[in-house]
Length: 200
Image (cartoon, rainbow, N blue to C red; front, side, top):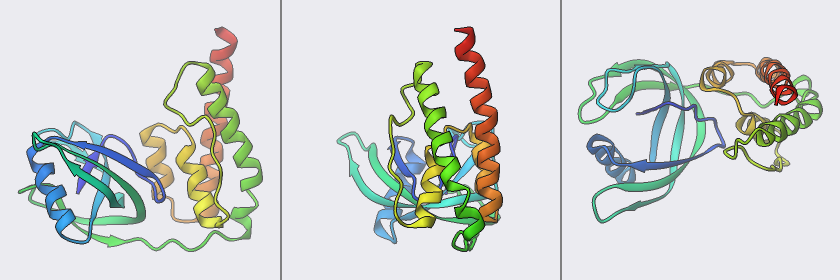
């Protein structure tokens, strides 16, 4: 398990710079096995040194590339694959570990897919306003997959949600409910951005 201060979604890229000894051990074991590890949000505290409080729903990450640097640090790129729920945490030795169960995600139905045509331009507006306010961390543009489920996840991935709102979306089980929640969160964010731009 790799607790982080951000939420990983399925189909989301995860670049990592791994320097802490326990996570160096984790990446070595992951690469020797199935190249997968769990990512869960830290809801309170900080992961360095432990003592943090972690969410119980996360996403499995699959390592696509990894390189060990001369000083023992690692740089890697992983991608989110599927959601899981933590059944119980195990001792953090040699690194955080947990017993987990995969969460099944049905394909989005017609009611969910009907939300995408309105959701996509809303995401683009919010990203444009966020960029206008000087945030260069958001994508300038994006293209959605022809696969409906991948397109739904991509729309969520590029939405500039804060970690706690992103976690609310991740734990939502039903696709229609998940997209409606994303839509409502984007409405709030858009209203806030419009106000900030008008004040600027």
